[in-house]
Amino acid sequence: LSFFFPILLGTFFQQLYNTVDAVVVGQFLGKQALAAVGGGTSTIINLLIGFFTGLASGASVVISQRFGSGKYDRVSNAIHTSIALSIVGGIIISILGYATTDWALEAIGTPQDVMPLASLYMKIYFAGSLTLVIYNMASGVFRALGDSRHPLYFLICGCGVNIVLDVAFVGFFGMGVEGAAIATVISQLISMILSLIWLRKLPKAYRLSMRKIRFVKAELTDTIKIGFPAGIQSIMYTISNLIIQSNINSFGTDTAAAWSAYGKIDATFWMIVNAFGIAMTTFVGQNYGAGKLDRVKKGVRQTLGMSAGSTIVISVLFCLFGRYAYMLFTTDAAVIDIGMEILLFIVPTYITYIAIEILSGAIRGAGKSLIPTVISITGVCLLRILWLEIAVPVIPNIKTVCAAYPITWTVTSIMFFIYYKKGSWLSDRHHELKLKWLKFKHHTN
Image (cartoon, rainbow, N blue to C red; front, side, top):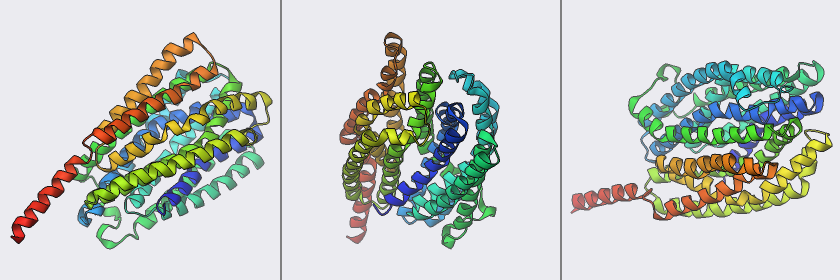
């Protein structure tokens, strides 16, 4: 919990970047602008950013395992490799995202009255996305080392700047969605700079040095081995969500705006469960590296219990006070009514998801990334796409689209429980520790 809460608060402030954009834009500029900075826009951004975040999770696992086993020279190599990867990845994302913005928005059927605003917002966001990518990697480094506080501090600084600049650029200077995007990029730049400065204050054995930033083959290979499947999983998740967004857009601007606002409310749940998942991955990574496998299993059981309790509380609060939350984003009664229909359908089913986050986080922390990816792609992504392609044409309404979530969450959670209980995700480490014990006995004898 001491590791989890700073992650949770950090995730909260990370989410505030786009949420503040949505609140300010929705109140000052109307529902077209609200739809432009959320919904499909956020999903397309996550398609590219999410892939790199998956790679970054691989770097975190590698660093946490090296740190847990006390191999500080390899910790240093892994840190400098991860920063090099973030620089290259950030440049690629900026170029690719900027170049494909209009095509991607057209592909998901963005309403014509939203299209110019969404395109402007996304192009500015992608132009400055290098700052976000480097910050996310730096945060992963801190967490892998057991420090979840400093990423929180840097986010609070950036988020405070974002709020002030959003109100100034959009409210006072009338810069529209362009101002909201510029405010976000500037605030992310501040968080990135603070992170890099503090990485240079780490213990000397693995302190960041600009001269040492390069790819070390062994660390890069391990990072890609663990992170690439997670990145592919993120892409598949996002593709399935883009298909959902395309279905949502077919119902018109009111529904697109309602979905955009719901996404910001819904993010509160995701930041909690994702924080548990991140904490679980690092907790397992360090204990796996140190050979404390009993703590791995205890941590999984306790985290499942804590995340389930948190999910029940947040679900009840959403159902009771969701309408007031929508009023933060819009005063349009039709948009709020559609949003509440979506919320009351999906929110009570949140509990079916938590096992996916916690068990996949634990298994990845042990360095096993392929099986969680296969399970998630099969149970969440492919099944969701099948549901949307088969069920929605037969019953074309918002509830049929929303049903894709609980159905796929339930199936995937069951598969994860089966693999967790029956799979071999800890067996390699058990075997390695047994061999070390036998060698030790032989030596002492």
